Length: 93
Image (spheres, helix red, strand yellow):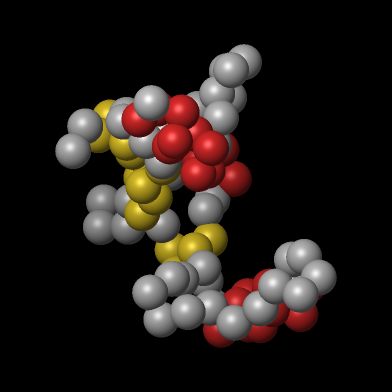
């Protein structure tokens, strides 16, 4: 797996370190951060996303809370970048 370290929250304690890595082959981000509280998860469910899409969080997923300072480490989308299935299909073609 080709991972590249992007950044770590400089304000976090030594044993609590929100961190972001980039999977260079897929463009996916791997994020270590704080697990959302039960209230935050319930708030997300209440707000929802798109009509007809479940607000349940499957067992294999979780909602994380990413400190705002970590936004500086998110890579900018470049023109021509395609995400999701289309991006994976294009990169394997």
